[in-house]
Amino acid sequence: MRDTKTELSITTISPEDGFRRIIRALEHNDPVALVVDGNLFTHGQTVEWFGRESPFPAGPGVLAQRTGALVLPGYCARISPGRFRVVVEPPIDPASFATTAELHQAIAAAAERQIRGHLDQWCIFRPLWNAPAAAAAEPSGRAHRADA
Image (tube, rainbow, N blue to C red; front, side, top):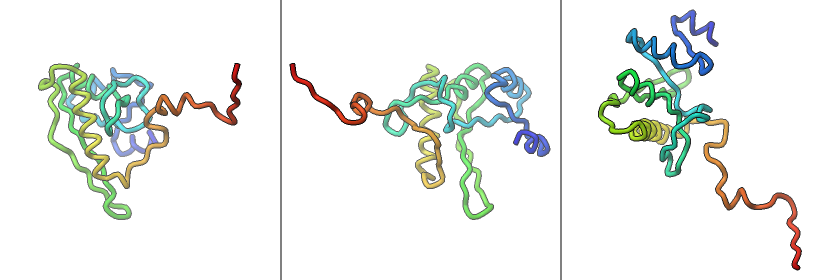
């Protein structure tokens, strides 16, 4: 995948590459696209997402605050076989938020709005939330009761 993108002059940076390459790209005014709805939540920020507290990638907010780069929320929607529409919303300016948590929440709200608008095109291949505490506490298999 990386080789194919390189042939198209698209530089890819994986999580293993770290923030330095992304920061260098931003310093050169190169556009950087980050996916915020994938399996990237291991080092995330807790936000309210789809009505529940959820881990959410911290990268976009942290990078925006460190570099002053605007966040341009966007998505790609399939409009017919082989045809797509890319939509970019107005920028989110990190300087307009008092805390990083508020910035993360604004980015999460944009992603939620975009996903809700095209829910039929969104796939996530892992549980989004942990099981509720009550369900997690239920024993598996047959339960046995003993009275003393």
